[in-house]
Picture (tube, helix red, strand yellow):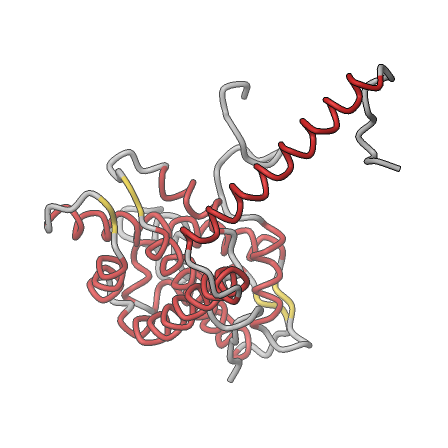
Length: 159
Length: 104
């Protein structure tokens, strides 16, 4: 359909990627056990349905709290409400790990700059200084070129 | 008993977040879903797959089969109350001896 934006080619409906789900199924079963193809596809449909179910319930809980965005606690409450309470502790654990990783990533990104030992203001000032120096160099080269009457200086620097 | 550990490092999800978000957004009633919630829903879905696969596998094992089939899924869905929402997707396998009321 031409008005369907995004989504992989050949899929009529929005669903989880087949390959990923097949892989998960494979990992969950013992090595000598297989899953029939129609069963795998069925599982895929069940997943999509599950996502809709949890999202819908989370949304209801979210609306009851007069909030606009589904928050983590809404999802956890929804799981509990729908009888998937046994997932809550597992999901919670994974969630805590996830948040920890995110903070670590953020920490790592800012480490380089913070290691310089300069505050943001100092960094800005030194940046301005570098720009000013570069400007001066360029201008002095330009004036030299004019006074000697030669062709404008190349950007490769002075010899 | 088959256990499922996260395929990637703990704290990461296997299901693609963008796709999960798009599936959620299909519901017009939902205005916004936070990134954290998205992550939770993805993880919960992975655990859901794990549970369902394991339960279906149990039925195939009882039948001494090496392949998990449709009917194993159907039985799993029938036997667990939380999976009632899947009843439309997986109509229960009706044994031939006991026809449902009203059927020939």
